[in-house]
Length: 514
Image (cartoon, rainbow, N blue to C red; front, side):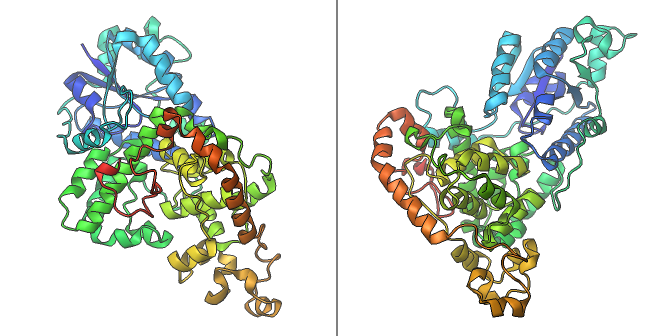
């Protein structure tokens, strides 16, 4: 009897417990869900990355004499119909998600009952009363455990379906599958055409396990360059791992990345990278524990923060990269143009949005999530909660764009690449072009207010005002954190009372810190 493997964010055959459990009887399926493809939360580049990863997954199965069955429709219609037709169980790997994805999984469990068999493919604790208790040991055990081997051969999906129905019938002739809501054996090009997938972002990595493995091998061989490349947006693009899209789609498991780096002779680079892999699981754990983090401030005192000052015009200027602050504008244009932004610049633009523009956090977090090719709900929204101090537990960090530009883009390469109208500005003024006199503006040919925007707000005044506002809220926020449930949501780190959960700022994180 065949077993269905329902792929979601695990687009690989090796180190895939659901695939290993189904073994040679696996009939792998991916359901292209209209609710995801048309929900407006993913840019075309991310959808294309997904489709490329599916093509690669199909190739992985074809190497094993099988193939990937692509279905289109509501998974709650497709999966029960397939399970009925094949008289099969449905194996899947648990995945931390929120919003629609979480509701879909709950409904799938109700619809399929015992036929839906879940497996654990990460370090997330899902059944513990206090997931933080013993989390470090649990996470370390996952990272160090032997990886699952993929089967040498699987069942060709069409062969399995034809055998289950009738050799002379087509796939959709079975009554269970004869439903307009269930489309089987669709092609990726059909999906591209139907949803008008036409990515405009540049420099996007190709999706799939094959390029992911190449990238991992190259990165591990050059781990010595990693520690000094994390904060610089230009250096990070070239010398950081750039594995995050592959981890988000599950083309690689976090454990594979960890074990590839584990024996590297580049000690500092290895430790910093391993730290990031634990943070990856840490933030997913936080979302698992409280899925509403994508929608509501964790600390109830911070709910509605800045709603009274939210200015759509300032939001639009931030989105367009026209705030008058060069590093902020370069970062936002880089995000929109490429779908990528290194961690430090994500923190910069998020704190600028929340603390300097003083706008409500949710539209900003959604905008970044939409444009990121490596978008991960746990990492994106939990980071926005942290950077916007919506937890009430972290220090208020208001990153100065000019200071950060001088530190992390001292030659102005990143700013000039993404804000080319500032290219003629002398280095001495590039971080703060508003300090140029009118004569200096004329001399370099960049007139503020015409060629490049004037500052939309005054950084110093806004930063002071934000710190004053948080100071007034501090006592109430601390009182709210006396509730153990809220305190756990605010941070899983055992050092949260004294140090901010920012891996760029805290240095090396040991397992005990989690």
